[in-house]
Image (cartoon, rainbow, N blue to C red; front, side):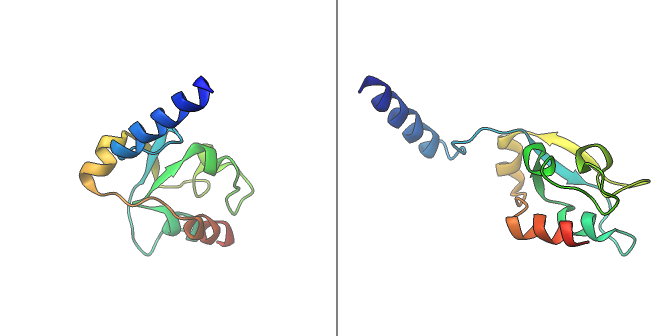
Length: 105
């Protein structure tokens, strides 16, 4: 019973601090947003992504996007950012729809 109470207390703390309950490393998919972007990059550039989600994907070349992002010669980078930075700068998170769109391109 004590464990359940501790879990509930922690969840309430997380909600009150507006931090997500699931902790993850956050990365800004950083780089140019222009007509030269591959579809994979266009779907994610300027948004917050997680390596956990990217590791479940493949880019158009069949490579892991954590290492290759949009593919060979990609102009983008993953920049690790804090939860506070995300909130302060109001950076949007990539949605499931964004991840699916990236996979289609």
